[in-house]
Image (cartoon, rainbow, N blue to C red):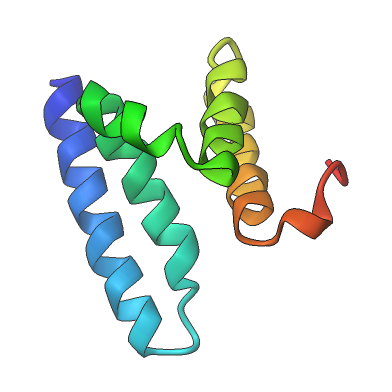
Length: 94
């Protein structure tokens, strides 16, 4: 069940991210990062490849460090980690 939910969430986020790259109102990069997080949790080889990039490695490390948090706090953490991955100069504001 978890695999199906992650896969559907990843596909939906990927679609919204691609639409967001075309339409300037929708934040495409944030949805693409959510899709990457979903697919990386499903495919270990993809996660190993993405961890080689410094910004994405920091993004995944932050998400993994919040695994013990309540779901609402995890959503906030994912949002702020996504913003940090997109704009690394805004670090440590949260």
